[in-house]
Length: 302
Image (tube, rainbow, N blue to C red; front, side, top):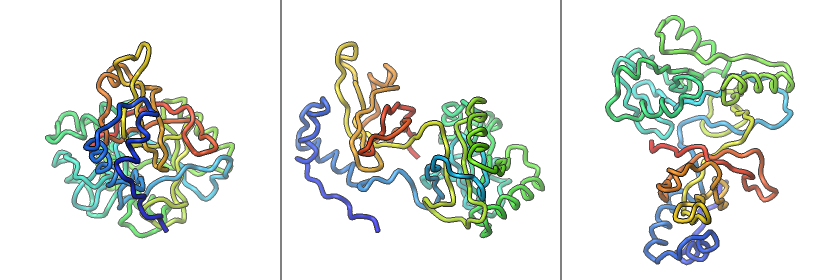
């Protein structure tokens, strides 16, 4: 059972800001921050209605799992009538793009190519879709929540259905089965060397289940997660007058000052309080904080 949300007063937050190099906020500012935080404590960087991946345990055998490349795209959830972002907000795709989708619910990634996330994101988030730009977008389908069978059965259905449809931009994600942890690591290294982000592992006999479970995992050279910007730390030396670091609240409810990876442009115009950002890190400290975290990108509003 989840713990009840923590109750805070404006003074609780005001007392912590000087330690991060922040100006002492006014009561009105504290109330504004508290109002922002009130909608997400305890922190949840996810939305209902989708299956979410846990981190693959080191050294575990992949037997019983189907393995695929982790595509660095934009999640596209088709409910049988409307194509949506992971958050549930409708996605403005051209009529011809959604017209060929089946009536059964699908889950996948809107994808362009490796290393093209920013370009893709700019296209799929436009309120008025750019028809010509969308011609280069694929919908790579990795699951069919509306099917009702095991993951192995859902994959077989996806492959057969999409092959029969013969829609060039509607592509099933390729899956493979591996014998041991060494083979899994070899595939990970090969995928990353070719510009891929990592791997996904679906348990073959699992029924679809919302949220996190042992049915879906991700494996990457570095861990990543999303934190909420709750303040800005002033820069020093060369960064005087700029933002030295973003003050984040992690999904575990801890505070983190994130400065590595910020461009000078972001330091001049940092993501505002209330923005979610993605960061990567190789490991955690004994207390659970990300160690050597590096900024990746601002999570676009959905």
